[in-house]
Image (cartoon, rainbow, N blue to C red; front, side, top):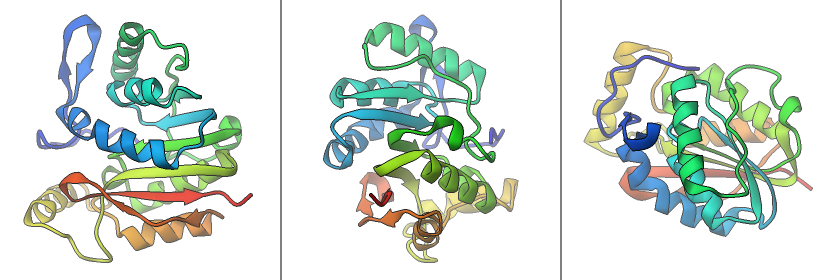
Length: 219
């Protein structure tokens, strides 16, 4: 899952910050919008798993606002896990666990992380292949309890259409580095969730042309 790509500052670039933390400007920009959405769709209590927690900026904000959930951050990159740990130490919240390594594009992790009421993922699907994205969604479906919710945030095509010149430029730059990655069709991704046994809910338009794709596991 980890990719060494030449990404613009508007993407998942992170820089060193005080106290061992990393800071991603994109996470700072979108955290409030994602948190507001989660307050609408997340179950009030239970266990939440964040896939690819990155710097840790998101999960501490989520856990502070959605305090009825116990949060498990995950991150395959050791440097970013250290940043998550630093953010957790500063936030000092009782409802976040120590970050663990997880490659969510690998097979068979869903059964090992079963019992989740909520799974979230931000800004990753355009950086992995279609096959990896399908595996991630299928494993997340396996990890959810009945009525559990999966939310995936990021840039997507609308059907097969890129909605802005900036999106087209970014997608072109990703595919030039690796032809297997790039923006995915929103409908195609929603159908992957259906194939995995999840019920698609109405996607939510988010700032900067992003989307939140949402599914619920049948009761």
